[in-house]
Length: 489
Image (cartoon, rainbow, N blue to C red; front, side, top):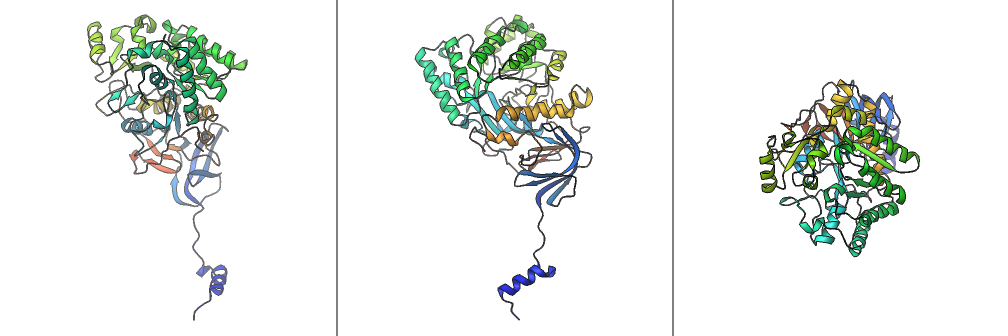
């Protein structure tokens, strides 16, 4: 006997034997993990239901999902948001992913247009990526007539010409102003300002123009400020005064590298300015050496006095070999595009900065092209080092503090230029499921100055918008990352 459509509908509704099987409520369920949400200070064993890449629910009740991860005795935290990387290359991006980074941003240098950042990784984006508007690139375009979107081109690092280091005319300053606005219109995540790399070529008028644009657009300036001698605070006042006068949001990149032993005084000055209405944030990276190009402008100055070091404190990144005066000058002439690692900071300075409640953690990862072309270890081990050394072993900060400094505070800083960050750096209903699952006793930062690209290990799962990209230290075939622009929702 054949049933009519109406009769069939009634039968399947009323008779469970004919009903469509129950579908799972969630695409993925993470069960019984210790959930750390830095914004709400949640620290509890909960079940997480993920649907369409976002956290749909947090519950003590059992949840039903198409796939389930048993996170019993594991930590579930938000993926790290690195505000300061220069490693938008496939090799470097994968190193950062394995270090717990789910969003890697080049904000200190940036790109112009910002959408050009990440061209090397767009074919397989294993993590989210983005950039600020690059003042240096705009300056090169206006003053030199050269167009380079990012620090790295098809043939390696970009080396500015002599004209780049001359002060601009009034007309050139206004041309740069127009292009900065254009870059922000096109989605740049604030303005990248490599002031120290072109000092003293940046005139007062040029710097004020940058801060005026930032104030008008409520867009953070991600500044590598001028470097004084052995922690001199005057370079901080130089930018802080203009930020206060114009009302521009200002972020001090790698403050530990500039402040050195004066870090406490620097933080007090910033705290006092913020109490009186300024909008200034800051970051450190969790290592005691800096890394940059051997042709960087600071090495044209009395760098030994500035850093309070000498040739034997500086390594050639590619080999780990320390310099002599003779090899220093030979290498600078022969390989101006190469990277050095200069050891000049102390652990006590780093710890003093790390406990500041508003301090953010970033990496300042140098471009990492391949396993042979070595750089500093920051891009491979910063966040795992933060968790394993400063949280687990030495208890300098708490687990919640680590996610506050490495995930939530960076997201909060970016919300004003990109709405997507209101859903990142958190574990809450509606947040993007950019998550880390791990046993804190198992994670290990394996990189070192002599072995900078040893991958971090011990993460059970790393996922981006609900897609698992690391499964028990193994890379999956998923590449769910995307470019995050100021227009991204």
